[in-house]
Each structure stands twice: as C-alpha cells, then as structure tokens.
Image 1: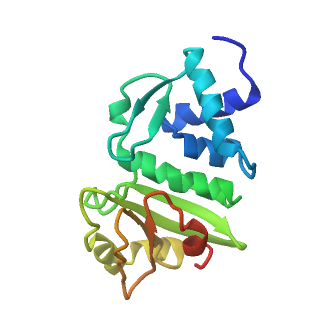
Image 2: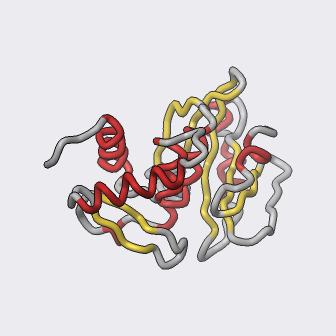
Length: 195
C-alpha cells in the first residue's frame, strides 16, 4: 500500500469499523468547518480510489457514491449509510458520542433499531434509537418497549427516537420524544439541538 497521510489513516480506521462512507459523510467528519469541505472530501476519496486503496459503488436509493475498502458493498445496507449520515452530523457539531451500534437487539430480538446512540450534549447524557423509514414506517414497537420500563430503568428517561424519512410526515408519541428528520439530516441543528 502506498504512503498514507494521517487523513488516509483516519478514513481507513473509520471504514474498517463502519464499512462504507459517502462524500458528504467524509466532508462532515474529516474536513469539518471548511468552506470547501465537500470538494476536499471528494478529491481525497477519488485519490484513494485512483491509488486502488478504495472501491466505490452508487447506491440506488440515496443516489450517492459509497466508498469502501473491500468485501461485498451490497452487504452495507442503505439504513446503515443513512444512520452514518446522522452519526457524521454528531461528529461535525462536536457532540461527544459515547456509544454507537447498529446491531442492538431488544426484547429478545423483537426490536432491532437501525441504530442506537448514546451521546453527551449540554452536559447531559442522552440516548436515542435511530430508525430509517425508507421501505416501511416505524410502527409502535417503541411504545411496547416503553411499557416494559427497561430503558427507563437503564437511562432514567426513555431514549429519544430519531426517525429519518423521505417525507415530511411527522410521528408523535405521548410517552417519549420522537425527532423527525429528512434523510440527509439537513435539519439536524434544528431538531437535535432543541432537545
């Protein structure tokens, strides 16, 4: 493998853990707060591709190029890519991520969120389930989980539920906070900073 810059190493570390990255995600996480961050990210990923360090494919649903190291890129679900866009926004806004997983199983496997994150914001530790409503709408599974009291015992409050969807349809609950966002997380500041 050719000489690696610190930025290359950071991108490889991320890809080894999360398997894929979009240009937008790379711009948020590795070139933050720069007027030309998207261009820099695009050029960096292209250069790594040209050196045969990365491969890419175009996701049919998000219409974005997904860069990856090796393996089967189709095993990287669109839900995972969308959750990582949310994750990238947490990084961009310097919100301390304490834990992230897209493999949580709750109630003996009855509930599997697309993502689960624990983070610190304004000196408070918060948790949130992440759901990507692309092919289906999130049903009432979190109401069922709320009724068990398991999450309240663990966190004090029931975690927020962040729903990424392609429509502007908002969901609500009388028992816990639901944060509705578009798939690109363009309303991240408005939605996350208000809770």
